[in-house]
Length: 261
Ligand code: GLP
Image (cartoon, rainbow, N blue to C red; front, top):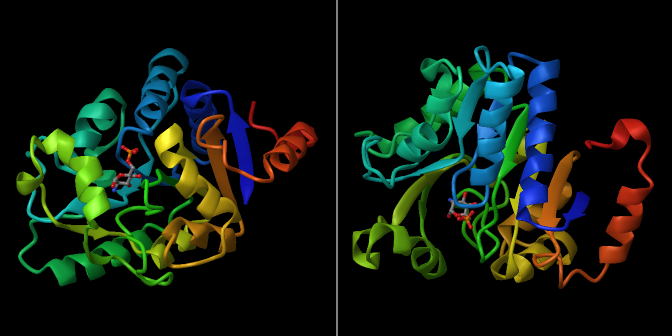
């Protein structure tokens, strides 16, 4: 796992955007796995700026989002389809038909899960999967204790996640308790993973993910198995890392071609 510690979320998101922009430059037909949540918002803003000011071209890019709430149509303002359209897609030159978000209102949800996996395979697999981190160590909506080899499926949200995400729904009762999410196995199949985690609420999960044992109780720890996982954290979320100086040392001694900025 490549651990990069930056001063704050702003610096971390700018670096994350550079990594994605470089991939899109090198491979204009890249398949990007995308994430929602507060964490990647600034990264999307920077990619939008690069599109506007530097001509970063998304016209041949394909995207697959990690997850969606069960029961929310794409027109619902808390659906992840809506989030992606408002915060990213409508500001860039992406072909909407190449953007994929699981359909949480499908009549046959299990069939939709299988079809989602199939669509990813047909696109040639995911080149880079962007990830946020739940306070309880979840990635996508893969909650603690789920299988580390799971595929896209319907998951029950934990009470912690309901607490963390319910503020935007107004109250906890109107928030769905189920979500369709890529599984950990699906995420680990991406050729590259890029996880962002910032701020004090993520400190414990960051420590468990990077330094804890590989364990289903911290789903993000599965990234320790990935051959090319990059984790960008800020000083606050890195504050419990026992080996922080080691990660900084590695970062400071990278060869020019190993650097992103
Ligand atoms: C949600 C999403 C995750 C996201 C996490 C963290 O539960 N399903 O993909 O990473 O929340 O959200 P935030 O970035 O808002 O802290």
